[in-house]
Image 1: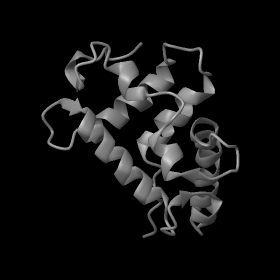
Image 2 (image 1 turned 135 degrees about the vertical axis):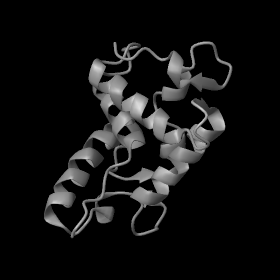
Image 3 (image 1 turned 180 degrees about the vertical axis):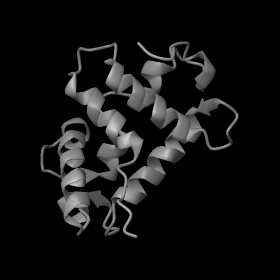
Image 4 (image 1 turned 90 degrees about the horizontal axis):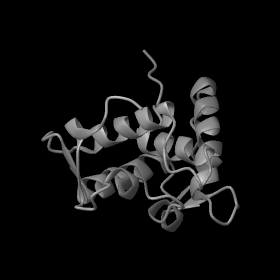
Length: 141
């Protein structure tokens, strides 16, 4: 059985958030669901809370997973060889590049990944305490 590689929710959440533009402070319901999924995946110890450290570790692991050839850059050379997976990766990469590719070279460096245009964690962590309690998030917008 061939399994399709999934685009980590972190990259999808960020790329969906970016489609709304920098002026938007409230995500759409679809963007919110992606963010919620990302935060749930980032809860490494399963305690229902996501710390900034857990979120950062999840993002680092996502970068490593997406950088399939290990060259320290996410670009189309990291696209899977299976045609269906390739088209999904390429579409998601195009969206993510809008958010992360600050110099518009169609490559996402580790620096660009670690310094996105919009800090999703800070937007969700409204009280700024460095912890997001998943049960306190509204189920939807």
